[in-house]
Amino acid sequence: MHGSPTQSSSHQRSSRQADVFFAAHEFQDRSHEHNDNAEGRPHEECGVFGIYAPGVDVARRAFFGIFALQHRGQESAGIAVSNGERIKLHTDMGLVSQVFSNDTIETLTGDIAVGHTRYSTTGSSTACNAQPILTESSEGIMAVAHNGNLVNAQIMRSEMEARGIEFQTSMDTEVIAKTIEELKHLPLEEALLETMRRVQGAYSLVLMTRDTLIAMRDPNGVRPLCLGAVKDAGDGQKWALASETCALNVVGAEYVREIEPGEIVFINAEGIESTRFSEPSPYHKNGSALCVFEFVYLARPDSQLMGRNVHFTRRRMGEMLAKQAPVEADVVIGVPDSGLPAAIGYASASGIPYQEGLIKNRYIQRTFIQPDQMQRELGVRMKLTPLREVLEGRRVVVVEDSIVRGTTTKRIVQMIRDAGAAEVHLRISSPPYKWPCFYGIDTAARKDLIAFERSVEDIRQYNGADSLAYISMDNMLAATGQPKDVFCRACFDGEYPISIPQDIKLTKLMLEDANGANGHNGDAAKTLMESASGDPGPESENEFSPVATNGPHPVTTVAH
Ligand code: SF4
Image 1: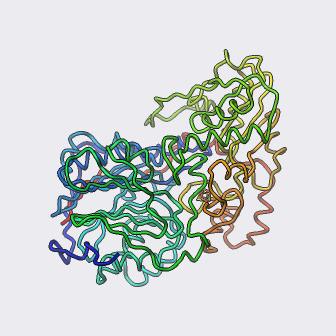
Image 2: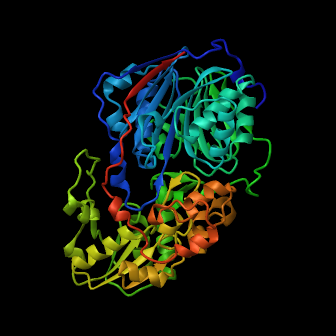
Image 3: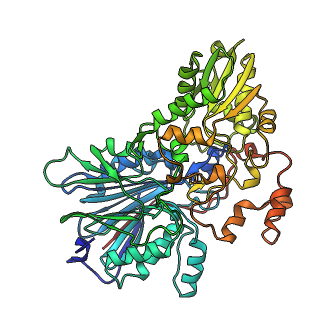
């Protein structure tokens, strides 16, 4: 960018004055709830949203923006709003609708807002890890919301702590925030470009100073981030940023384009300007490594990625799977919700009728009530109910988007058999999931991935299906209409586009918990081989189990 509008800082203040107080409503600790989601599905870690719209109720639009991104994270939510003089922030544990009441939204007045919804892993599910977080820059106070995962966060944090920098959270986002703060002697644009040079990994960031909304996407563009124009709110340029296009629609914004890998976009009263990370991506020759799993499972079906609708891409995957792995059957069903488009595609290409055979309890919400042993054993039945009228006596093709640990799929196959199915044929619309993700998706350690060093036949036997077939990598990619090299596909082929530091790699690639040992001092290759045998993992034992609580609380912060 030339002549960054962010460098005019009439409101610039040299120090952060934060007045922290707690919201009036009684705190309810929800940090134990996230494990009711731990059925072995990979979890997106965050959704980010931003809006620049003077004269508009930006907090309310930010609420509906992150509400539309709820599928990307259900642990905590937060919105920061700037009125040009100060930034006010409200965060808490829980779903977006639990964190924000109408009264709370009405206290968040301003012209710019940043929202965040987060999924976190065990041990880090505390309110102090909710986002957005506040930091300082050359433009004064700044709010930071992050989707993705840094691979060098531990190294950077150790080095920064050695320089006397203190951290309040366990999030890698704070490493980004503290890096910006450390560089506040530089103009903001330079500080952000230098931050891009220092941090490695996946980051789609929405940032906000008191007068500017900023988008920043890593040079590989692993996590999605898009720009929309708000069209329904009078004169003047008004813009929105979101992890997915589905969040633009609900705030009255029209999709404009994706934020490009390595791009930084500044939006303020002077308009919209863009700058690029000047160095080509050191990790990926095409400068793009969008997570292909966004197409398979993570993104909402009504979103658009790389110009393609996600629902129709999943349907296409199902069509290609039907041609690649046909089977004689009476009915095709999908596993709700993400398996449904591929099931429809499979049915249409195969000519086998599609029906709903599994009904999802759409109103299931997180609960404070712990299930008893019987309910733990029921597991997936609390979420899915088989329709005997569709399944009984039939040869059933059941289409699922992926198998990660395998335990849930095994239960689903059993459930369909219990409902009287004559045969159960599993079809998976992504290739075998063999490698853990280090770029923002919470998956099991490698030893717990069922496809790790097991054949398709081994997995079929484990799941108890009559047949099992996965879509090929080529067919999955063909369904996206994009060349192979624009994607990260590491969880399927182990080709990580951003190098993973060895110590981080070991945390997911080594045998972590045999006999309670952590195994970090062993030989990685040997350990991987040792972990290849045995049961694919007791994920079911984790379902609904409580985790230690850490005393989180709803927080409202005002900073000038
Ligand atoms: Fe996506 Fe898999 Fe790459 Fe992670 S490893 S970013 S889930 S494609």
